[in-house]
Image 1 (cartoon, rainbow over the protein chains, first blue to last red):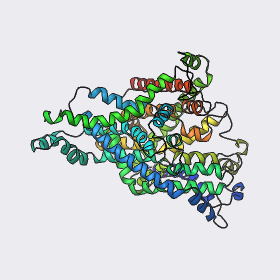
Image 2: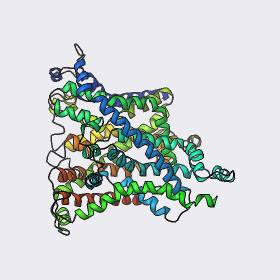
Image 3: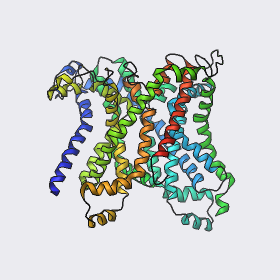
Image 4: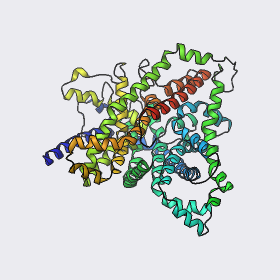
Length: 274
Length: 294
């Protein structure tokens, strides 16, 4: 009975795992094809000779290295800022004593509910007036602003589950508030901070609509634009389009593979405590 | 202790930058939007006349596209709640029981689509569902269902359900991971006690796991509704609201009104209503879904 149940679970899992992976396998497979090979009746096909030119097109005309650099710069800055802001706000909202903290906490949490698409149009006008469009800051500021509410929410939940005794003894030892936050609270809340960093990475690495609205200068564009440029420029060259999609997905998958354990642990810690 | 924690300068330094950022990217645009929503302007900086509640009147009373967008969001949200979430819960339970290396491998595989960018997902599925060379139609040929072959995203009757399918495919891992971590937080001895009382299998999980997961479920259901309302990028990059208004969503609608149709005032009125709808939806689902930590 037990082993029978187990094999059923295995079969269901294998089917769904195949369903999750198959589109990606198809994408990789056909990225090595000539465009004329796309109209085959086979679902997957071993390419007679892999079309490496697809990848050369993707690398050079997709401006892969330039966009990758921009994506790394914007994401890294956003992650650092989001983590710091969430830590400071979360601490001030849960531990520190001041009058308006309940009100300000609710206001920040509204940021989780407010759709960014609704604020996109007026934001474009504001950023233009402040000369922030077509700058790195023009992406970093809204990305951070969008990530901070959720980050603050996760960190506050986590902080509430931490005992206050450690901070109390730190105060007795003569620590200042800044030492408490950066020397004691920061290491203690590491699981929550990792969760915040990961969710921020996934959302801003892949973000498209704000970048499409706030950027027009080619030299600042992020990775998703490689795909968009290709959809226009190489609209009938399916092989190259597929190659650029595979290429731009690799960095996020590599990061995921490297931090897989921390990502799951971080989300688990954040979700349970939050 | 008290003195350190009510350090006014520290509180200011901790809170002010965050609030400033929030004010710049959320409050200022909303105020500006509110102002523009009472005008007939074509774009910021162009000539404008105040027209009072005209935009809102038009939207609420005569704009079927607006209502269609809301209906689509509700349908999509129900799709998430009815189709995606029960499966996520079931898989989370099974995954937890699997144990060992297999548990880790499957967990990793299920999450892979979540790290791929929405642009790649959208373009990929556009190709997968392509009527002439897409894999979906080829698979139907192979299993002998050629009569089902279809321009999945191009047909009004299947566009929304195809979109739901794409979003479930790409969001499955997130839902699964949240429920899975909820289950990991349930102490093992509860199960042992239930076992001693004679509960097992499905009954055990129905009586213990699901009720204990209810706070997670409450949060996830709220998030599902909000995700459906906020749906924009995938639609924008696949169907752009079409065919007809079959996959029209508020985000796409107002974006096109502002940047393609140059009805800037009108677009801002949509934006204001959009925000109100999201806040009301959050309030309602927090209110009516029983949650232990609320």
